[in-house]
Image (tube, rainbow, N blue to C red; front, top):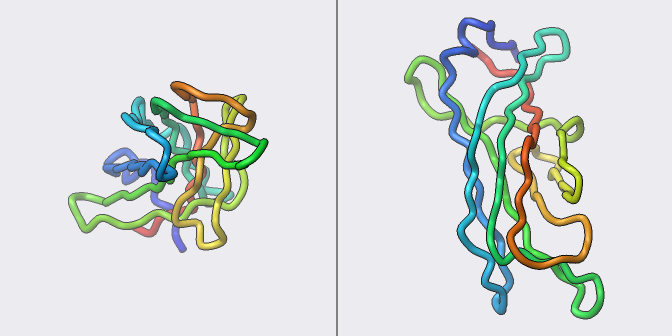
Length: 138
């Protein structure tokens, strides 16, 4: 896999999308992803960091019975020079998780779950998330 050169990285158009996962009785809603930016291209370790803020209303985490929580599924897509959209592969480690949050990245690296790390309810806002994506081919 080749790493995109900085000149190509500047032309990447990223589409960061998140889908909110909710339980049947919950009303988590109004998920917003904002301030999306590329914050670094590392040609040595073959990754690029995508930084963003994420928030949603009516979030919850309960560790007592019934012990459940909501979360967001976040994935990254990109394209080079108006070409087809490509699903980015996330590194399994190395993400920047703001205080109060946790992540789970499945082994295929095609997205990650973001959720509260402690009990709580209400609007959940995380500023400055850093998502580490494996290098892209150009």
